Length: 206
Image (tube, rainbow, N blue to C red):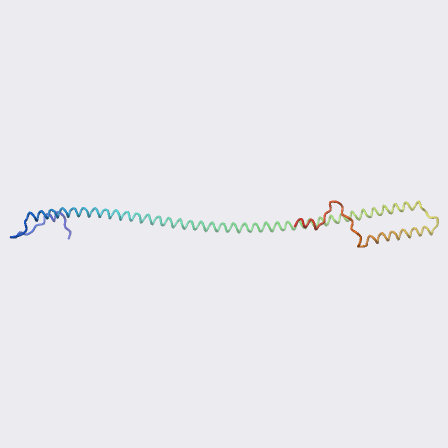
């Protein structure tokens, strides 16, 4: 049961012979009433402080929970961004590698095509140069033969035997010249200036 300061102050006791002094009892009750009122007031103040502390504690708990949620959200967001960045970087690297392989493959194919074109052009050049050389040799031989025939017109033999002998010598000389050209030991004629060897040019391409 709860007592108030007023109840303590108004508390009555039965009277009896040889009992306590009434004045002292009332004085003590007044003192107790005042102390009790002071204790109640103090208790209210303490309870108010406790309530305030509990409210602050709840506030701090809410703040802590909010910070924890914010931190967790930031952590998850950072992990997602990091994962996305890694995935994007991997995709870009793979794409760059594929593009590099394509460029290298195309460059190699173009190089081979250019190399084959150069080989064909050089072969054709050699054929043309060889044809021109053969034509010049034939023209030179024809010119020399024409000069010899022209000279022989002014040296007519006196007898038919000398004519036959002269013709035979010319035929033999002609056959000897043709045979000497066909021998493999003959040295090759030098190419005209500016003509390079095909292998040297291909080596430069490599």
